[in-house]
Image 1: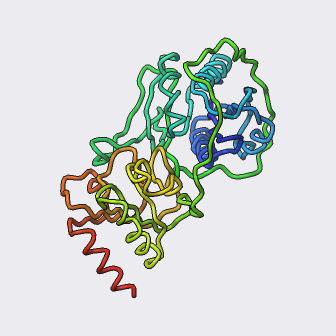
Image 2 (image 1 turned 180 degrees about the vertical axis):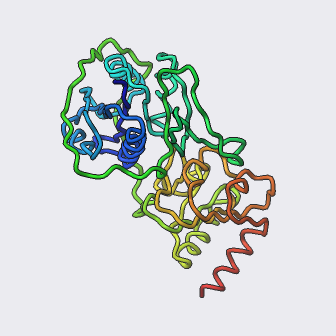
Length: 320
């Protein structure tokens, strides 16, 4: 019987939190339509990774052994194709991350499958319904996939409840001749970003700054404000690219997901898609930007065009 295939996401041999969320979403769909739920683990450390995905609701764990835990989109694409050809799942779930989006479309194209990205809702009403945002997050769009035997979805992180512990699925290796895959690049080494003693993923209150703060000298000003109001200092990518803050502060698709954030104060951030990926799910977003047309206002709960430096001074006085 056609089932569901979840592609586990790992980073340097460590499972990412989104993997349990993918499995949790798959378990919900499985409860509605049945079929086996398989999890595909790819990497050099397949044994410990397999133990980590043995969660409630998983029927089988499939592994593809590689020489390195470093992510290679061509290897992942080929591994998923091998698993899909063997078991013919009707649904393939992949994380909507920089890694996941690097191979999901290729898999869908090769399988002739339906595809939807950045999905934050799943339902079954006789057929699979995927919900994603559209028109700069102004509407929630429901998609179905008529005539498609297979559907590939990338799921938004920090959205679906993770699967529970207590699984005991058997492990089945998949033989894959990776030597035949000749990529356009090769991995040399992975360099950890400079540690700054913060963890954006665990912060409940984030004050995030963007290029609107104008220059590096103003970073210290907002860093002091964040400390004063009990927030963790975050930032958009241009701040990191300019060398004003370490990578650990970056929120967004190429940074960190504000997974546990309940209040997000965005100062001088225009709201590029890559940044919104990391924070648009937050329950309360306050945007401060003098450009009324900035995309950040499309996702903000509250917004203002007041001068950000005057606001910073007012907050400093208030919390003194």
